Image (cartoon, rainbow, N blue to C red; front, side):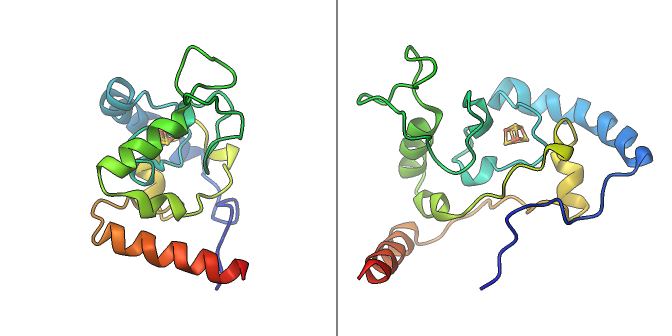
Length: 152
Ligand code: SF4
């Protein structure tokens, strides 16, 4: 099985596209900043994190919590807040999207920071959002049994 861990192998953004990207980002911001608190990473993974922006994590973790989450789900950096990944887990469970947490999100390509994620999807630079999930519980069971078999 091959998997690309970074998007940096994709064609770079030309100066012309950058201008268009900035223009599109204005409209993207109107929708995504007030609703999701978008941080403009340009590589949107909202659909695999139960529509909670993982980039609001102070450590910008993209594949689960850092390991410093407190017993009650508090953030290590800002203990008065809940860990973003703690919230993502519970929202995923509620929305039957837990299996998407098994998906490995690519290492952040900082060249895409501040660009339009919509345009990056259109240009096939990043993966398209996953809107619908079917048989979540069955898929999670399969993944758990795969994990157990791998460990044995
Ligand atoms: S583009 Fe990045 S920062 Fe913005 S909502 Fe999506 S994941 Fe969060």
